[in-house]
Length: 385
Image (cartoon, rainbow, N blue to C red; front, side, top):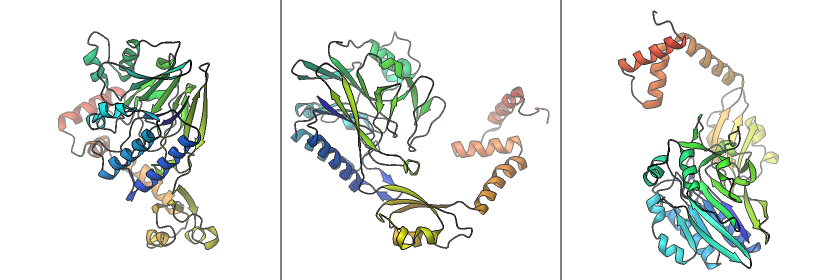
């Protein structure tokens, strides 16, 4: 049996002011072609189907188109919600969709639901774990110790009985880490000590019982811990930091003896996102211009600021997304900003600026007193000053 693993479609997303619906339909059509060529049995969609909890009309039409085309081909779909999705909206029509072999799990109800596929003596059980929070799981397992996302997922899995004579696949949307290392981010995510995009870390070891784990949430395609625990990555480049990434889709084959093989099939977009760098005259010279329809991020190395650089660039590259500079002036300003701003402001000023930046309002006197007390205890400032 063969499966395509997808995640982070983010249907309805824009790249700055550029609408990506046409690009998204193009890449979904390439995926349909792959499904036809390789006689795929199922498609695993690991969350963040939409870019927003309330998707646009164009985004919902595109998902409808993709699911209908898969259903026409007799391809089963296993879809879970991501943190960008609205659980209830994605759950709409779930029972009807199931009659068309489109299985949706977007609201956790205390059970890790599964669907089984049978081919001869081979049985594949596909389990679907929608995006969950610790509080949701705690509701169904009140006696379990659940403080973190990791705790929550482990409790769910501990209360799920797998048939080890079958091949077991899990579709999930969480921030999963390897042993002692975080996944490589694609650029559209933000990362903290314990989370990415407000999703706490989960250790990949909790998935040891599964033969393949189809993950969503990280936009850069990669394995986590072992080849069979994998982020498919987003099918398109959704951030300027992804300009140098190579997008692909995992094609998963389950052999008759249960052996799993993984082929990463490259995805070529309608319009690529590219980062080009150099003097403006050189970048726009006729011999150097290639694929003008692509999305362009340009870094100009000209020493002098070019008047209306964006307007000039868009005459050649109409889909220019961003222009910045890398020259001696910019480097000098960056160094002055970092050094002088820190040197000229005292502790209270720095804290006020940071607080306003983070929360959009002024810090209270009581909160400032707490910050000073903590800083004093840490030896950062002298509280007697």
